[in-house]
Length: 180
Length: 356
Image 1 (cartoon, rainbow over the protein chains, first blue to last red):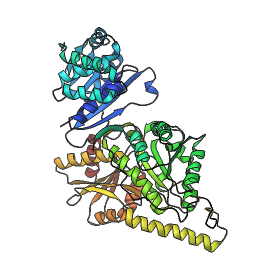
Image 2 (cartoon, rainbow over the protein chains, first blue to last red; image 1 turned 30 degrees about the vertical axis):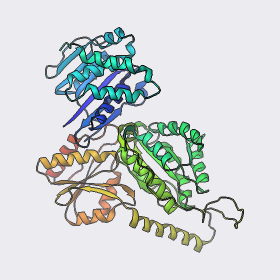
Image 3 (cartoon, each protein chain N blue to C red; image 1 turned 90 degrees about the horizontal axis):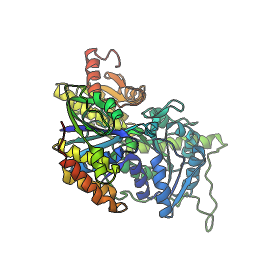
Image 4 (tube, each protein chain N blue to C red; image 1 turned 90 degrees about the vertical axis):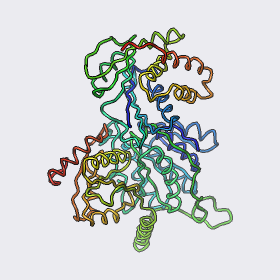
């Protein structure tokens, strides 16, 4: 089995970090995984994205055209990647910044108020981590336990004080009742 | 040992530290700037040398200065800036100095852009410096190999007193993958017979490439090439899969390797007997093994992110014994598995009449 994810949003939403946490979670689950960012001038204010590929065997290619899952945190990313979701794939969107529309009939949609939920937890800075919680409830091979360990690993000792908030954000995202 | 999720660039930098690199000299350029960024802090912490040089020319010449004392030293850069270092590489070969250079390729020609590409095969393997010289070139294909071959680069450079290029690309430099850091696995090389360490208690030495005697210069060039013969015999490295019963062999170097492995698997599922061959050392090139496989009637399809640079070397190694075709793109998005598969099918349909 090989599945790939595109994570996208605007610069500052913590997209690359979310991808890093997701990739770490897969690694902790003993899967083969790659993470590849867009890099360069795109990062200055525009959309940011990264691609995570997870596989039981060696990852076949790091950068693919279409994805099984797209996690998009703003409208621009929704518009840009909606056509890069494979037929039968899923787009998971932050409904606080993405208008609820379903321009394609051959893919699944999940809209969740990730930004609002993060704000309720105290800061919209954890929208990215909330989104991973939501993702874990949409994708059966992502375990919330592995995500929690991954968050701990990525924050490290330096940012240990932020761990409780991030664990809460993950949990809240995973428990959110999804509007499909 | 613990697996870590790490970027190719950081993997190279950390491996250099573990290999005992005592000095780093460099000038920032995308997509390899993380190497210098990491080492700027780490080398200071360890009390080793780090200089952000004023230019790439300065950086490579600083490396030459450092390694002439027998120290392990390196620089890293990318394509258009590695072009600036070609003169120094020729000198380092002539002087027999263990320079380690990491090239994380971007797109050219000229300034090009930061997109990943594999257009520096010729620059690395054939070189842009003057005179007859050869550089050892190693091309990693995964983040794990970035670590393992950084170790190897330092070892081979010192073992043979010859510059080594670690040829990575923007994709490999920027991507993250789980990897394991083993300890530096090679023995330390004794440089005391030639290094410039001060004349106290011994006669003076000099390292120079100027040789105003025809016979001596000829002897030196012959020596360099005899040395490279030994390197070819001992160090030529490649990886091959399913070649035994294969009718066609997909060939790639560096980070394109995983794509051809997956493409060969798909082709097998479609009933086409495909195998994979991937040179690990681009110089010395696994000429002999390719020649053997071609002699068994196996055709080659070369997949690379340039206009067909390794393609020529494969053709040369095949010596007309079988067919060779090219599947390529000049820059940017790596050829996808399905694109490679359909290109191969088209080539077979047309009986290798044209490259796709």
